Image 1 (tube, rainbow, N blue to C red):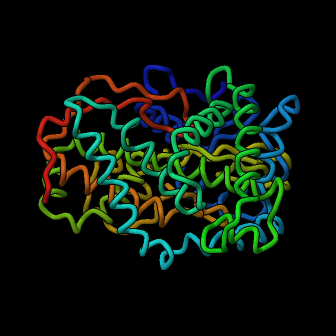
Image 2 (cartoon, rainbow, N blue to C red):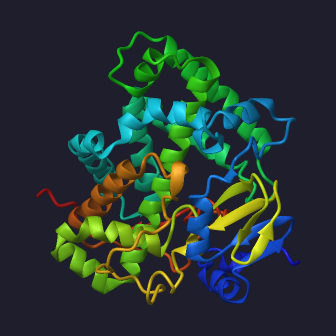
Length: 387
């Protein structure tokens, strides 16, 4: 059958394309893969232990540093390896552990907002949405904040190898993998306690490649998804004046708004699984070894699950979205990402009330997995408020 694709001109808004597939062929086979578009089918696969990773590392063998690193990422591990490593890390990302980070994240956000406000026109991605999560993850890992620009450059290089990007960037990603491995191996040799995440992993006996790979995974997963959540959240709010006005007037609504923004324009649009045996999904038989692409962005716009799904509704009732995945690979940093988004968006509305878009067409990265603007030029027109 025909491969699934979104035309370049619709990359910023792939939802009409998703809708056509969801209505005509919700489980679609094309280009050697199965694409799943409906919420119920996506949720079923994500929570079905017959689907897993099974060593399916999407990196060609001629890039050994990148391949070894990715093979040790939590997202590409199955139990029991996944269970053991996640247990070492999960305690640092519980809600009880994340909530006390609010003052530190607010201070980091305020510093970035002060720099942003100093320019009449600024790139909100480069100046705020990207550095904030990098600074937060660096804090958690116990890495000096002075390294955040270097870390982001290499994290972006790693993402260039994402197979949804035209041509791929495996060579640059392989170099970044080697550099990041050396960096975190050196960090592991520095004297430290077990109060930061690197120290905690060392105390738990996680060393060498698994340690470096876990640190890099937390760095990349923690920054790319939250960057897109912040950038697309700002974009949605600026394009919906009523929602903006309500959030400005009722800041207590922000946690609920973040959930709706995650559903409305999901930062991670797709995830992959492999069938461990023959499994029927949505009336289609997927053979053992078959690759399944779960289109989270489509599932979150499924009217069977979310009435009037193409409308941004800050008062939408409870309904578990798939923005952070489901099942054993549910996003480890979900609580942290939510908190960063709440603080970041609230700070922008409070301290830059005159914020507006400075260009009509917002360019998007050529990526349907980690989906978001590559640049978001905004006018900061009003003076930075001090209260």
